[in-house]
Amino acid sequence: MRSLVTLSFLLGQLLLTVPLATAITVNANDLNSLKSAAETAAASAVNYYNNRESKLIPGKFDGTWWEGGAFFTFLINYWHWTGDSQYNDLVTTGLSWQGGEDNDFFPSNYSSYLGNDDQEFWTLAALTAVEQKFPDNPGHPSWLELAQGAFNDFVNRWETDKASCGGGLRWQLYPTLAGYDSKNAISNGAFFQIAARLARYTSNQTYADWAETVWDWSMTTPLFDNKTWTIYDMTRISKDCKDQDNMQWSYNYGSYVTGAAYMYNYTKGDTKWKDGVDGLLNTIWYTFFPQQYGGSILDEVACDPILTCNRDQVCFKGLMANWLSTIALIVPYTYSTIIAKLDGSAVAAGLQCSGPDSACGMQWFNSTYDGTSAIEQEMSALSIFSNTLVGFTSKNAHSSYTPPSPAAPVTADTGGNSTNNPTGGQSTSGYHPPKLPAITAGDRAGAAILTLVFSCAWIGMMVWLVVGGAY
Ligand SMILES: *[C@@H]1O[C@H](CO)[C@@H](O)[C@H](O)[C@H]1NC(C)=O
Ligand SMILES: *[C@@H]1O[C@H](CO)[C@@H](O)[C@H](O)[C@H]1NC(C)=O
Ligand SMILES: *[C@@H]1O[C@H](CO)[C@@H](O)[C@H](O)[C@H]1NC(C)=O
Ligand SMILES: *[C@@H]1O[C@H](CO)[C@@H](O)[C@H](O)[C@H]1NC(C)=O
Ligand SMILES: *[C@@H]1O[C@H](CO)[C@@H](O)[C@H](O)[C@H]1NC(C)=O
Ligand SMILES: *[C@@H]1O[C@H](CO)[C@@H](O)[C@H](O)[C@H]1NC(C)=O
Image 1: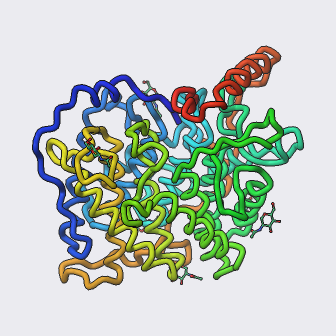
Image 2 (image 1 turned 60 degrees about the vertical axis):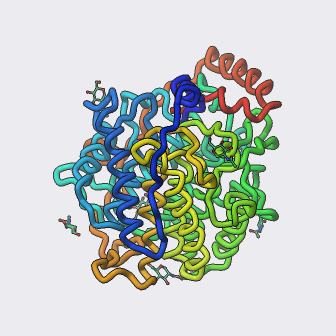
């Protein structure tokens, strides 16, 4: 993912004059207010999408690739919870298109600068399609096969040698990119979640074994402290995975806690996974739902309050809303706690959606519009409004609403019918890993220079906002 505060964003901040506008009124106990809020945010996000410069390439956003995966995840959730299918064709076309030549979400147009995390967010979108019974695209690889193809790539990239920290996925795939020296939480947390979801859906134990391997390895590094249930952003191979970046990002927690929830469900309640779910949720509540705003409003604490979230980071609250609604269903004892947090966040997000034409800002904790606007703000708003509808699987629903059945993610045994292909990841048959360039001496020197630049940058954590590297 890219970490650049774009010029247009800054200009937007400076030039925007805020006209009076009304917020999106959300009453969490009124089904229709949530549905209509979701409808408004979906229309607005899709409007941005339809008017982008790269609109002739299905699924490709301007200046970023991974966000298409998050966008389609939220639109699938929107369809799942509201039944409104008007965007389904747009999702089907884009999600298939970006499966790429080898059916593993590693299209050659972009593969030379994609990181593991970029590929993972598309894989998670495909898994959402599988689990929410979003119909496969006839004549194209199934959503499940695309996810399995990407999974096979991650397995292929997993390092076990001691010099590479005895396990883990790197952030970036090429020595010339700054993130090549790091093993980061999102790359490994999302791989863990992908493996856990494949395990639960297919009941294939190989996936469960992989999930356990990633989880256990993470705890041998500073990325994951299982005494305090704290997740740090990254660690460096050149430091033998002994250092850490202390930034606290909600998506790192969300990726691991959701994987643990799937493993909890798959193992029918194993305490190893229950401890993980409880421990991480607890940290999520006190870190990302600050007491100062009442404890039930989601806040990307490292950047929302000071309005420095870059476009990637603005999406994180949307990812978390999607993950929490899922956990509420597959770890049923968390349900009422989670619904309260989603309800509070949806109401707060509605108040923040009070820019021109109900544009949404990023500061959900602030009842005054913060003056920012972009597709990412609309995407996160879309996700919180749609995913909060999970509360109506138990609340006294409006008579006109029938929750999706089943509401929880399905498996191959409970109604899922996406076509299985464990050897996915190739245009014909049989898995072949994508070719990455061989590492040359020049690349190593380049990586060393970047490492040096990195070391200097390490001092100031906020420097991460401008170093970047991913896409
Ligand atoms: C790759 O780029 C070409 C040329 O712009 C475009 O036609 C094609 O749709 C792109 N493929 C993907 C998967 O984005
Ligand atoms: C924490 O991780 C260590 C491995 O680093 C493991 O031995 C221990 O069992 C874990 N504890 C919990 C509570 O998961
Ligand atoms: C797993 O999820 C299902 C919903 O799909 C739920 O009914 C079941 O109780 C969960 N299992 C456990 C052990 O909580
Ligand atoms: C809420 O946003 C308004 C408008 O940008 C700003 O003036 C105010 O300081 C913000 N409040 C907080 C608590 O950040
Ligand atoms: C899977 O089920 C959906 C309906 O839920 C249906 O539209 C689709 O044709 C089915 N696909 C296959 C391969 O059976
Ligand atoms: C289970 O998954 C593994 C890993 O992809 C694969 O090699 C194996 O064939 C799968 N087994 C079945 C029964 O599908």
